[in-house]
Amino acid sequence: MNEQSRNEKFERLFVAHLDAAHDLARWLTRDERNAEDVVQEAYLRAFKFLDSFRGDNARVWLLAIVRNTYYTWLRKNQVHGLSVPLDEETMSADDSDLSYAGNEASYSVDALLHQKDAKRLINRALEQLPDEFREVVVLRELEDLSYKEIAAVADIPLGTVMSRLARARKLLLQHLQHVRQEA
Amino acid sequence: MDCSTIRQQVDAYVDRELDVARAAAIDRHLASCEACDAIFSRQAQLRRALREHVTYHDASPALAARIRARLPAAHATPAQSRRRWGAFLPRLQWLQFGAAVAATALLSWTAGVQYASLSEDELVAGQVMAGHARSLLTSHVTDVATSDQHTVKPWLSRKLDFSPPVTDLTPVGFPLLGGRLDYLDGRPVAALAYQHRQHLINLFVWPDHKASSAATQTFSKDGYNVLRWTEGGLAFWAVSDLNAGELKDFAQAYASAK
Image (cartoon, rainbow over all chains, first blue to last red; front, side):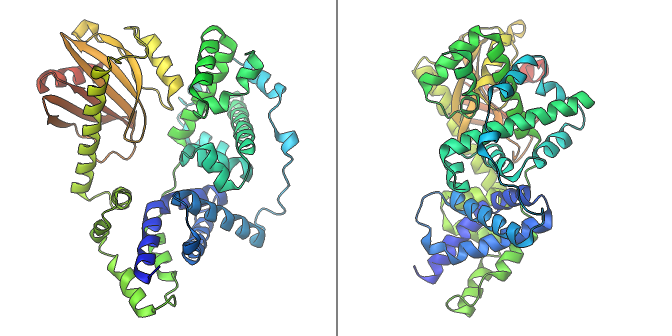
């Protein structure tokens, strides 16, 4: 690839997906300065490995780089101390989770949203999710990726995408329910 | 399918990752099972809540500049490379790429480029007219045919990630025929069908937070009139072969009734 077309290719990716890259990094780091550092590092990596991009989904490719850059950065900086390894078995959906939802038939998320600080509550609920769950929610709800695309970005099997999303939403519902009971 | 099997699929269902047959089987179950229906509705509510309230953190223009400055100038010929990046600074020049992806990106990059956003709206207006024509040609005006707004609204809410306002306007001469789903502007949208005398009105509704302008816009082509307005983060596109004045009456009746 000659220099000009290479630069144009990079600029296309760059322009089209910078907001998505930044949003993912911001939700992973939960901090604006760190997010910008991660995005910058990710874009430098993307530029370096541009020739290896063969696929047709540049956004997925770029978001995967952002995510990897974040975890590298996390290990280097250890900002949250040692990350506790996730046990997929204990974190997976089980029947008790489902019955809690069924028993509380009157509990309405919509009702909660009429509170004037709904935006803050929802953002905080998402912020408090562990990385592994927060990232699948952000990729699904903010970036509108399919399960297949999320699997590609997060480098996990399709089944794990489903179980993490299910678990993430249960945690969010539990958190919001808890907030509601306190209110 | 029993309740436990149904509930295991709630995420795949709200994420529209199920095939049509399976989703339809779930719909049938939900129609007769209140407990499961409550769980599915809550999941849809959570989804709406996230999409509506979670902050989307756009990149600052400063970040773009900062990254450009750090790009390896040493790559190949530094001088030439630097000139190229400089050439990108007048943002309108990005248009020369011509590719649709660049034009779309440009919209979010510089929201102020008026003619670009206008042509975007015209593009959607064309899709809206096609959607209207499609509903007439295939006689597929409604998926859920009823003038009962309390049936149409929950049906649409369950199928979509937002909840469109649905009001029967029979008292003011625009009876509600029902609702259906369509696919416009690259996403599933709500389509409400209304009637006025012998004319059909399709009202397409979908979330549009980056609408270029809140002002009402009109489009007209091949005997169809299109009226677009936005309110509360939703874009409304009304289309009909009614004359522009009557279509405006409809839009006002709808907007004030909800």
